[in-house]
Length: 403
Image (cartoon, rainbow, N blue to C red):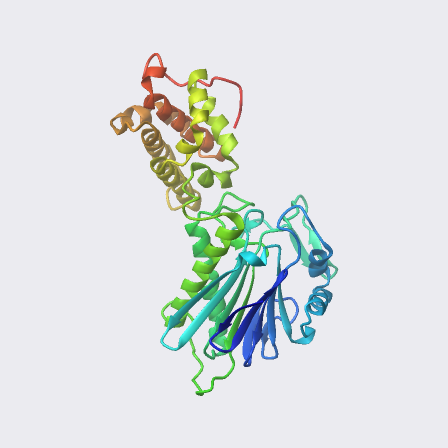
């Protein structure tokens, strides 16, 4: 099925589990492909192929792609009647029907980003602990390292209507990568391997294709950085395409991330853990009311804003921007903001700060989550003061559950 013709020079097709570009005029291609990768001028087709289900299912293609990428390319090309020697290959578990195609234009310059992606299983932050080391005998699992999830990849195919010098091709990869990371930052995607914000996944791939020559004999562009219009177009197209495909593949949008749980997930707390963590500070009648209204409370914009601010300050402390010695005051002040957001009683900020100060140190993950749960519980009790005998009573755990 022909999806689009790009700047009269590239045909974009989708068949079954493959999305491929057929070059109608010669293109230079720079890619991370394990076969036919690097900078090439002999590529006729560039494709992205779904090799397995996003979760819970490995098929032969996925295993072959890892163990023998050349045989993998031959098998896919044979199945889809493509010339193996002229193809560069991207592989993923993402659904090709969820690909996002975004064009950006300025005068006679056109940039098209075609992205697929999923981040639920394999999002990571650059510098996170590795799971394997590559040796002469292949990949060796590092001691005590968990096996990386089989699914979770962001693949980017980037098409440019003008010739680029080799250095600008590399710069285009840099700019596209920055755009990807910016998209993940805007979506507050957390790493699955640390408490940090994700900068990509462990298996991301990219291919940049630029017209090798032009009919008008245009001079090759020399910059794809942020100061050049080409860099701006790349950034806009890739950022929008990645957010588009993650919305389709994972239901991940900026609106869906207006959620307390979304900001705490990277610290190991899911929605049920959050509900239980808050309920341990509430009396039985309050627990029932809180649980019945959990979704509305967990997605309340002011509460999300207060929690997100506290999470950001935790990051700033972990990065060394704020000194550890300030954590007690920082945490108690902003935890009080969380309680006030829930209760709506901002005039009680001083009261909340005093009650929460004892839970604000030391700065570790378990104590941090404990503090947020207690702040939400405190605010909820003050939201409906008629449910408690004494408005300023100290909160005590109502059961032995742990976070």
